[in-house]
Length: 161
Picture 1 (cartoon, helix red, strand yellow):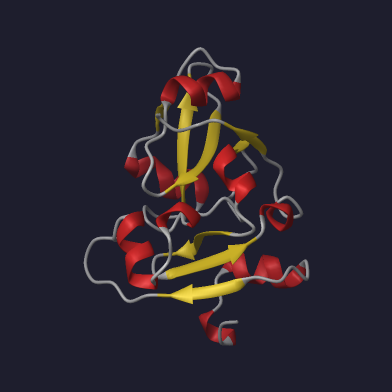
Picture 2 (cartoon, rainbow, N blue to C red):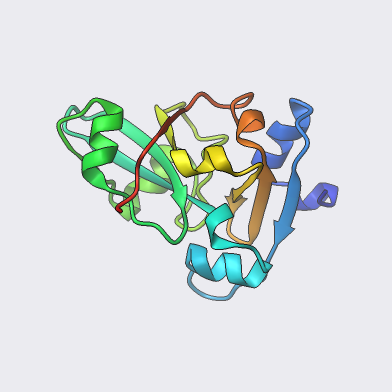
């Protein structure tokens, strides 16, 4: 666990709900590292490290997709999961005002608003997944079943083959 002053809002939410998690930290300079770089810095299998992506649908609704860092979101599959005609990534400048998170530090937990969220089906095979703790340089690891105690999400096939 992290020191008290090192906690992010994500960690505080997990603590409040008494959900056990593992915390990782890494140092970075300048631009946020890619998800695969984060996995490498932490010595973790990239198949267990996930990134959080925010999209907008044709209807104007926003959707959150959590996929492995080495994978690419299949927008057609994402739209299908969300029940939209199509979805596209939101503009980078829209991320902070919409979610409260910056690029590289976006977490499915603790967004300003609860958006429909989808977790790639690959997470079902992992006893625990690692994702951003809501701040660049901080990651948390927890079981998908524990994540379901904090946010509502659906499993879906979301990545390109």
